[in-house]
Length: 152
Length: 144
Image (cartoon, rainbow over all chains, first blue to last red; front, side, top):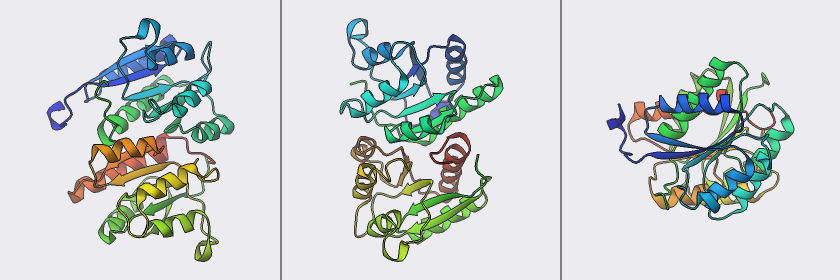
């Protein structure tokens, strides 16, 4: 099915998530997608920003085409990561999908105010979680146009 | 989750695209109410509840064409995202433009996503339904 897409390059995704189970499920769901993609993982907010700013051991990191961001993260909170990405003119164009267990109305509002591209509540149920990740994959990789970073 | 219909503002000057979007959304799973602004000036007046739009509902989502009469969609996007009262409303850019420059600029202006409008009718309806499925069923919208 992949020949239907004119897009031949691999879509680079940065998943910022500290829960190993969620990382594994997300990875599996993306692997099943029709669009060729590569998922890199940052386990906390500090690592996420180092990756994006290509500092330290991430000097050779590829610029992601999109970011999946948990909010409750060790070392640096996802809300701070989001705010830093969206005020950085080199990074602000990268779509950020907030994927969080938080149901708080305040988190939803403040994420949109900080220019999250969308907010998704992470279902607790495993099958629902996988369905949601598939929906993200289908919409963002197959329907939406991502800004071409060209790995630059 | 609210049982109130989702309020959508469609900013689109092409009558054919307006009609197809209305039809695609009418058959959708999620109860919605669609308002239409035909140009960029009207869109901003609607959003700011000015003049004839004093009683307009605040939209939960905006579907925004880029090439519009009177005021360009790019300017509308910039104004919405710079306005503290409006910037929270998700804006889905839905345009025939495939220009890399438009995609990059829209995301830099904080469009929530960018979708290219297919020329083919059936594909156009499929894309509108995909937007509906994702944004109204999967995404958590603000203030709902």
